[in-house]
Length: 377
Image (cartoon, rainbow, N blue to C red):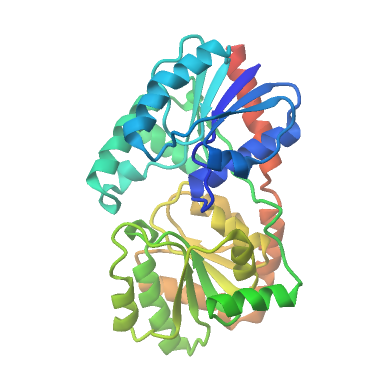
């Protein structure tokens, strides 16, 4: 079986789509020596993918996915020709967008969430319309649709009418790089670089309305006054759509010097940030999976999360849930592991056990099972 995967989302400063693509390709390479793979990539993504076994071949192009003027025609015209010439049995796009022409090849698409349909106000109008159009088309022509969670499966059925049997839920994995670290010098180096002190409350997220960061800052300020919490709040992630109010919210709630914006950080520093946190909080209004939550657990951090979308499913019994629209509830739940050491330690142990169940090798093996099922139809 010959599988083609589009790896052009992979880039140096990884976002969720690029990280999924890279980790899936590497995991497939580690568990599958029987099938042939062609990975579409740019020169930059080829460097990040690195060396692969002999049954993997990279097809490099200078046209990336960000450049829609060239990237869309490349996907719709060049990719189908490549599929035909190379005798591709399955084309898998790991990020929503399939070529409409596919000749004899079967098509699989991964849909990570339906933000453009449920939260259209959280991004630019043109982007929302583009993603709505292409997601609808992709799930219609696909032979199978991969989702990261049952919550997204339900969204696809309810919003786009995708048949249940067409959807396969394959959870993401946690890289073994995310683990408890005992190297104090490495941890101190990261803390010094980012100008923060240990035992903070951490959230890792692009700063945009759907992530609910402004309400988290308001809840944090109230928790400091009410419970005399001395832990600072560290917000790790780049600024996204409509993020201009964050500094104003920090000032309005008198949190200068207590709330820290790190911006984007490299993975080595991110792992250290997790390890030095007293608590991880995810206040998001909508997530298709929520991988940082599991990464935090794998680094030994107690986790409290929003009770919306896929987050309760991903956290299971290893974390605490709160209503992200209710600041009082958010404050109460955040305070529990911070004020009670027994709860903190119990959640830490539960998180380590729970996160260990999610591996990229499992993700890859389930993806290969789907490839085989699609070919067998």
